[in-house]
Image 1 (cartoon, rainbow, N blue to C red):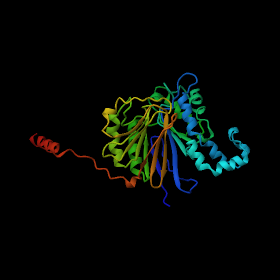
Image 2 (cartoon, helix red, strand yellow):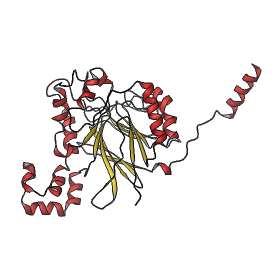
Image 3 (cartoon, rainbow, N blue to C red):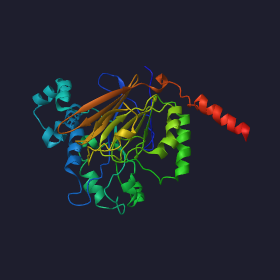
Image 4 (cartoon, helix red, strand yellow):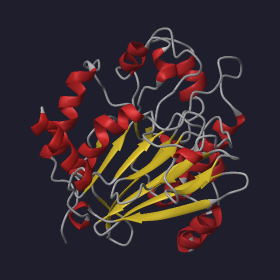
Length: 344
């Protein structure tokens, strides 16, 4: 079987493939958006805690399957051996009934990790109260790849980078280079990639029906570049909702994931989107994304809690995407500019 690789920019680069219970190679990760809690006690929102609980639901099942020593299980999981066998036997049905996310490999956030003014220093209490305490379930003790948002830059964003030296689950990172250097890095990384799937993470969306709307600057700098290198998806946050946007005649799909803490059902900028480009907008409940990459497809799920809602779409590998041809001026405009140039 052919191996596939996976690349994510801005958060980190991944080349990770695992075999699940059916020996099918896949990679699965969860995207949380704008998880920054609140700056007063208890330093986290009820919605943030519920999202954490939802994405951690598969912990019991995985621990029961993977732990040979029954005594090492958490108290809530210490059932009788017969019950354990029953759970293992009926695991697929149990996963479906609990709406679990089995075998998550890592987690990504889309920025605004600490509201409203980031953190002050590397020992800031908010690291524990808003992050470590909220995401403490055993199933969440995987690598977390965090992006800084605008609210993080209102504080000491370098402290978040330094915290990677202390955290056991946030990979160590150095200070980010200037924007020009980052652009060169993005171009070079995209150009060198042989991955089957390319996903770019950022905080600000290129397109959004929400409060903040579209970013013309990101569209001008990145949209054609991403299409040229056949990027499958751009995943962002900033607006506190879930969105799936596909501009006309574009193979690049856009996902907004910013409702894992605050959520808002405002769509003031929907008229500024191309007709029919907004596939779904969910802003009346907190949510997150689940992305599963397999050899033949990339599945992106938008999930919510209370009440639960699930939307999914399938994306093909990069080698199935059409080649990007930069649009030219319409012939009428081209003739006009040529005539002006000759007249001058």
